Structure formats: C-alpha cells, structure tokens
Image (cartoon, rainbow, N blue to C red):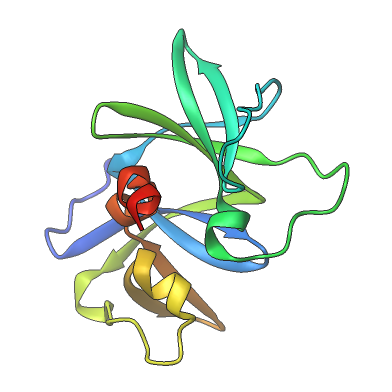
Length: 152
C-alpha cells in the first residue's frame, strides 16, 4: 500500500519530554535508540550530557530536559535518544519516550502562543493543536546551536 504525498503536509516524529509532546521534523531524524553507553564531558554545561559513539561517529549528547528547563528524570529511568545531524555534527537528543510519525496539514500550523514558556519559544517553530494535546515543533537550529548558547 503506497502512501500519497501531500505537498501541504509536514511530517514529524513525536517525542515526550517531561510529559510534553514535541515534534521533530522527520527529515532531521537519523536514528532512535536506547542509550547504553555515554561518556561525560568534564566542565561541560548541564545540558550537555556527554558524548557517545553512534555508528563510528562521535555524537554530542544533549539532555533535552535540561535544555528545556524541565526537572531531571527519576533515578534509574533510562532515556531514549534521537540521533540527528545538524551543521555536519551528529547529536543524540535525550528524550523520555518516542511516539508516532504524524503527517500534519501545514494549514493547521500556528505560531507560538504568547503564554508558551519563554525558554520554549526560543527553540520552537510553532505548534499544532491535536485532540487534547499540544504538539510543540522543535526548531532544530535553535535547539542545537551550541556556539550561540556559549556566547550568550
């Protein structure tokens, strides 16, 4: 069965971070995997969890909870990671869980609401209102721009 392509649709992989639903553009995602081994980086910022080897490449691991201002996960709760590439660098984004792939109409996309946490507004492209949920679309450039964060 073939899926028809809608030129007016956006495709996202959904992830949960701290109970909130986020969308990552599907074209940005390389892998979803269970984090098994990671090396901490001394003196790094709290949102840099460490580095890991992802298919022979070193990937910077970002703790999305810390980056988004969400309290840390419970001790012993193993995070999942989403592998993404940005600016020729590989990253592992630590998330709580992965959901489904959604194809959403570009017509239903909305700008960030004024009451969205200011930290989230900086890394969000906008939102989709789903049945009983709000999908915050992550702006991967803003989320992963470590150089700007270090300069700020």
